[in-house]
Image (spheres, rainbow, N blue to C red):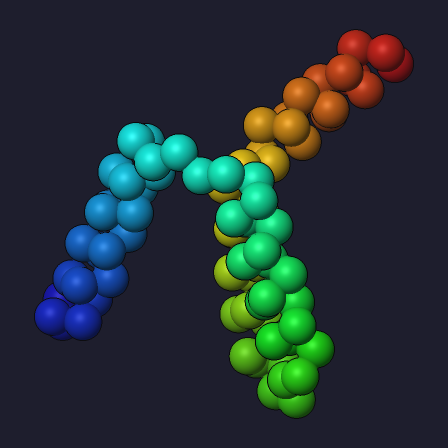
Length: 79
């Protein structure tokens, strides 16, 4: 494996570990997603847009994933 690949693996592990202990506010997530949306709107490259959209989605789910899961469960129970 290359050093670059190892660095990516280590960074991903660090992020996963940090997620377990870091409290992130919905306001901060909203600001980050809004900033990425503005950046996406100015991009011409579809590849860059894709990566930015993926980043925005990942950031959004840091806070709102639980809300989405709870809504899905409520809908399933109502059906």
